[in-house]
Image (cartoon, rainbow, N blue to C red; front, side, top):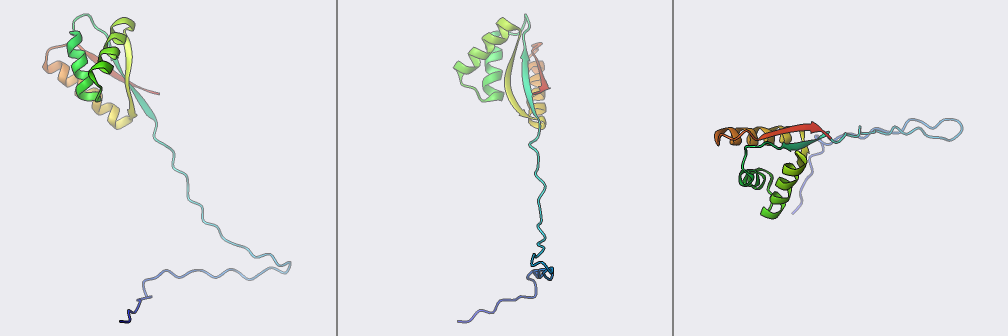
Amino acid sequence: MLVRLDTSAMPVTAALPPSREDGDARIAVQTRPRTKRPPLYKVLMLNDDYTPMEFVVHVLERFFGMTHAQAFEIMLTVHKKGVAVVGVFSHEIAETKVGQVMDFARRHQHPLQCTMEKE
């Protein structure tokens, strides 16, 4: 069976310009602009004297996908140092995570604070 290729929709390639007298041909090169990676943001959890440690561990497991052991370690860092980085994300994801944590804490009547800052 013979299949015919429709060439009417195919792009036309440009011919090279005529050679200069010294024999060099000019070639047009298309360059693609390099895209920069988006800036990253650290999500920080802040210590307070009222939020139970178990609640903080639960938040870290639920919203940041940590294991119980990882969440416990981060919770202790927050408790001892007053603040800890709980994740690094693009702006939109960091903003969403901060909002989720703050809403969840408010719904459970805890003053837990979560913020973000540029890395």
